[in-house]
Image (cartoon, rainbow, N blue to C red; front, side, top):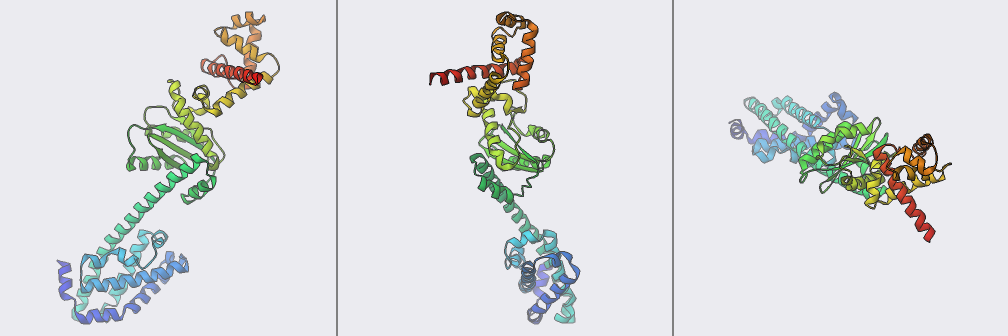
Length: 392
């Protein structure tokens, strides 16, 4: 109803006066911005000049709409087309609406100079209608820009995780910098699976949850596997545990904590190896540390796990005393102190003492069922390594 009234009341003389005062109205709007709006004064000179073009475009578009009030003539995208897309990132939606409001106020203030007394109230009414429509249109422009930015971030994040897995440090540094990675504190990787395909909504929800629990976060989707990279100060393991409900009921594995994101690739690869091997330990904790899955990873052919377990054997072999022999006797006698003591011709307390030394040297307790299994695989791999070196 109002738009129709505006169309009928628009007259050639008012439109001519509006067009003739475009420069005057723009200059008045910019003076108002400079005097009243702090964020405008804080902008770089280039952005202020672009806003001048936007103000001119807003006034010109209003005149076009006043002459022919069709929806296409109040499209905020047309108003901002005069400026580069980066301007939308420089000023917020609230600032854009403030700019529209100031332009409207300036046109209102000059109504008596532009329109005849009989037309002045109708011009003011048209200005109010136009400002409302432009406000809605501007909100749509910013919503589309935010959606595009979110899609860009998601693609950049996927590339960052891919660079991390491939060991492309240069590509990783530039991409995490573009995503705002602060780089303060350590970095922890977390891998798991989900049931069924992950749609954009689920991925976005996981990203929001990851960024709430840690200062820095990256999320990569690889088929049914999820790779989460967490960074920052504090307890990153606790941060990872907070994300467990986002994963399926299957295993979730944490890679070793590293100093910075450029070292996170190795941590992620270790965690992925642990995820592959985790089905060999159905009762593994959730999340499980990749280091706790050394025997399963070694049996699955993970080179890092094989090396780590051989190093455990080598540490025991190099330590003073017959620690390797004691470990073998204990494990191969059914983990009986008395049986191991008879095999070694020593007192059971001597076996007990040596087992404590084994735990101190290797970090694994042979008297614990799970840790004893780790040491047993290390013992076998050490024997195999010694045999192959002797054969060569």
